[in-house]
Image 1: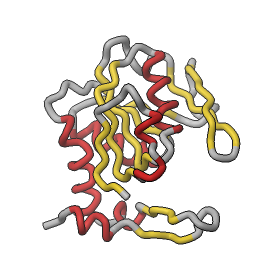
Image 2: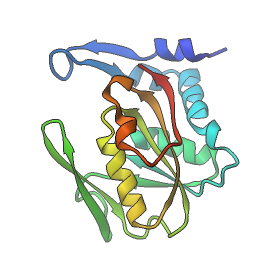
Image 3: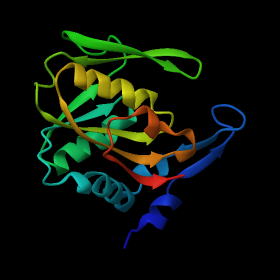
Length: 175
């Protein structure tokens, strides 16, 4: 039987990647383990069962992995939030700050209908910048963000503070 300790063992620590001093959390061993992947998806989805989620939004690229599986588990649709110039129709875009510069994300303008209940998904919550940008895009389209679910939260980076007023944040693992 898979449990949280088993899940944690499927996360590889990669020291000094992508730069010295960083302990990168590599999820690819978890993705390669059928029981681990199934448990991670279930633990990310289960707090939102029966909550009327209509659309799951996942951030490029690892948010796609979990987002589509969670959407299927919740009988919801999936909406990708992508890097610029990857979506073929009219998009809404937002630029946001990174540690070393800025980045931009886009969503189809018709992907979210006003009032639709949306669950935001990514693999990792670190500084919160990417998730905040995703939430701002969905808010801009009139979506009702019911919660945020992530596999890993790096608590020491305090990404939750950036995500106020979204108080329904559900991490599976915290470091």
